[in-house]
Length: 87
Image 1 (cartoon, rainbow, N blue to C red):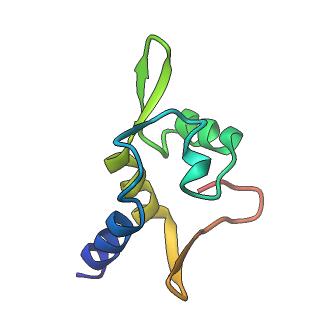
Image 2 (tube, helix red, strand yellow; image 1 turned 90 degrees about the vertical axis):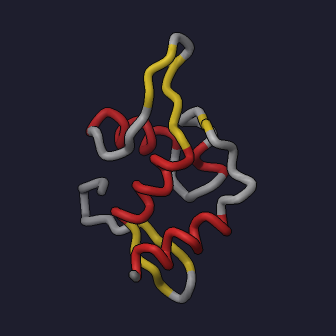
Image 3 (cartoon, rainbow, N blue to C red; image 1 turned 135 degrees about the horizontal axis):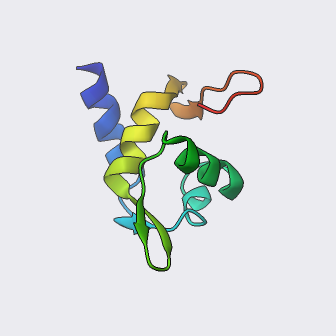
């Protein structure tokens, strides 16, 4: 139930987010650098689709990543990171 509540909150927060994004567009919607986004894609932690012009990240996959790797703290989502490790 908690996950569904968080999904609804993220859907509201990202309602203006496009359905498909390039990795360089993700930092506009969440405080991750573009190099971090590419590293998450390379590690298989953030699902993406390879197209002829580069990677495409679907909004649903981005929300799934946030649900799996973020903690809710004072109604803001923050990325959980261990020192020296990107999760």
